[in-house]
Amino acid sequence: MGAIGILWLRQIRRYLRSRARMVGSLGQPVLFLLAFGFGFGPVFARAGEGDYLAFVAPGIIAMGILFTATFSGIEIIWDRQFGFLRETLVAPVPRLTIVLGRTLGAATVALIQGCIVFAITLIAGFRVRELTLLPVALLFMFLIALLFTAIGTAVGSVLRDMQGFQLIMNFLVLPLFFFSNALFPEAGLPAPLRLVVRLNPLTYGIAGVRGALGAAHGLALLADFAVLGTLALLVLGIAAFLFSRIEV
Amino acid sequence: MIEVSGLVKTFGSFTAVDHVSFSVPEGQIRAFLGPNGAGKTTTIKILTTVLAPSAGSARVAGHDVIRERAAVRRAFGIVFQDPSLDEELTAYENMELHGVLYGVPRAGRRERIAALLGFVGLSGRADDYVKEFSGGMKRRLEIARALLHRPRLLFLDEPTLGLDPQTRNRIWEFVKELAAREKVTVFFTTHAMEEAERVAGEITVIDHGRIVAEGTAALLKEQTASATLEEAFIALTGRDIRAEDAEPADRMRMMRRIWRGR
Ligand SMILES: Nc1ncnc2c1ncn2[C@@H]1O[C@H](COP(=O)(O)OP(=O)(O)OP(=O)(O)O)[C@@H](O)[C@H]1O
Ligand SMILES: [Mg+2]
Image 1 (tube, each protein chain N blue to C red):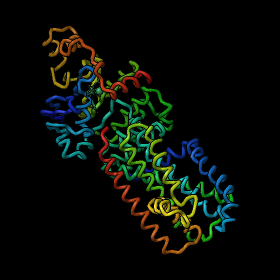
Image 2 (image 1 turned 45 degrees about the vertical axis):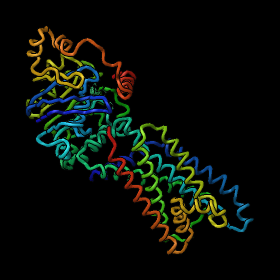
Image 3 (image 1 turned 180 degrees about the vertical axis):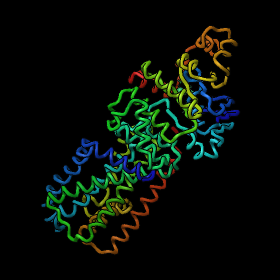
């Protein structure tokens, strides 16, 4: 195992050991699933839009991923406060390796969390249309995880204390979630709102998951993949740059 | 093994390290003494490539700390002044992580970890979480970890802070043995003068970022006409208390130290 591998494993170990956090971060998505999935169902159906649970489940899965991902990324702040970051920074390993190991580990954790939410939506009655597209859905889930871990890492590299986490949650992550296609369809929105939703990277991630699970057209999926993948790499690059400038 | 010349580090308008020059020959145990805020940790951070100097140069194990970072990093082991373990991992996992980061070959790694843990008296605790350890146990684990990749040079920034006399003695015996048997060079800081006198071959004293004296304990006592090293230290660095103008980060560290009792 190399440096990336062991840093990846560290994130996984920490995740598996913090049951409270694991369960705690499921609370919000489950709440949304119950309240929105079942509460809006009748309205949605009456408006002729079909099955709301089938629509909203991918959004809820994404929600589970992005909260965990952002949090795991921003955990860098804790590592700095508890001193562990210094141990990795004096090691004879390029910073890029360190940031990659961390980010991939944190993104994997978020993906697992997303899979648990996925399982819960299945229990709630959500159904996958086309099983062969399941890996594609997982790929999109991973890209969402990677994007938001990278955002968390970038922010965590700049901030010095955990109070910054609230800031990012309230002014970046929550707005990105609410102004995406997670809870409502894009079609029929007022033009300004629609533009915002369109510019939101999360929209492409959710469209991808929704498309893959709902057996959508391959071409649309490819476009979503291109947008989300490019963006995830871009933000990862920014995170790596900011991480490389940390002084401890 | 360490060669420092004209080293300067400024933080804004404050000069923490002010034209420092000294050298430590291979195999020596060198004590680096100075009051709080004298610039000891800052100097060590530069030597260990964590901070870039504002001016001057430093070579560690024959490599330049700015231009040959990777080679420098492979050559030394360090115990930082502040804790640097992952408390959510076990003692073994912390060691393993270090071993992989430093490219310690897989063959024999497990045995070496076991031997080092045994050496610092943590054999039975390898699979316990570090968060369950006492301050002294954590410190011993950090020392074992710093030695895992067989460094030629060991930096110890206040390694015995908050430890009981038994553990302190044990650690210094070990350090001396290491230097004698394996020719490991040791560069350490402490506020316990008797430790410096007992362990160090030579002593470098720094104050307000400047080197104020250098030599064996006997020489420093002679130069200042003092009976003990503590008196010599006070004669060299004055009686003022330094914590008052401490920076916030420094104060936080002191608070934490008081909280944790170390
Ligand atoms: N990142 C920083 N930003 C600003 N000032 C700093 C920074 N790091 C250290 N200093 C200041 O530089 C001076 C030297 O600090 P340093 O930590 O090197 O002291 P020290 O000799 O290790 O003291 P101690 O015995 O208390 O550990 C102090 O006044 C400290 O407040
Ligand atoms: Mg210090």
